[in-house]
Length: 322
Image 1 (cartoon, rainbow, N blue to C red):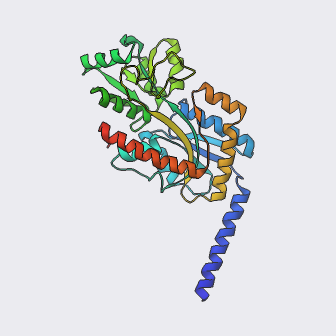
Image 2 (image 1 turned 90 degrees about the vertical axis):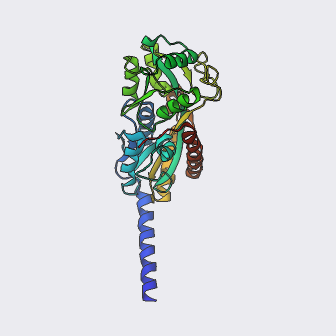
Image 3 (image 1 turned 30 degrees about the vertical axis):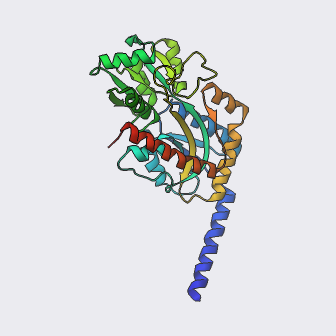
């Protein structure tokens, strides 16, 4: 009986300590860990949301870039941080859906080791080629690669990213064989295409637009199922050479497993509010993002469905990363 009372008192003490912690949250800066390098579209999204939340919550939300292994580097780091709401992560389709099927060994479980907070936004990728290649369509690109099998390569912002897997699906559907050249971030990978060091890439559209306008790369298509309203003259990959092709990236916030529900709900509320702030909405539209939002359970269910979806894609494409 004495032990039972002791355990009950311990539970009550922990409960009220957690409640008090949640009520005082936040009282110091919050770190937002991003899986990409500075300048990537996900980094721009993270900094925009962080800035808006900082204003609303009254504390700094500091973005910290930890690129590498398609998000596994960032994920492993965040998994090991205290579950107190002061370290959160911008999860991506790579780090929290694709990688579980792509990598033989994972440093974390995207569902068990993290508490979902909110889905933020999604956006399709673009298919771009080096302007020096002379390629002007998806069909012409496929013919070019078949004619130059030993000299064709594609870059990505890292193994396991949606950029990487989009190219793997492209290879599989078109029956091609190219060399994959992974970089630590999409800006570096995109510059390799602009310089003609690699032939093609599937970058996030916002990162590709400025280089396409400068003439150093050529945007051949987008990876969405339908043409984008703000890029009506750019065809989809599906309608321009590979029927059925579709690949979309997404981003959301997660925290280490065990983060108190009251803290998670608070970040969810502030993030949802930030997504609909006029200045944030304007940025999202200009960068080609579609707002997602919703509850933490919505995001959890979405991630589970995405893991299953991309598992089928990885298996069918034969893509693997050791």
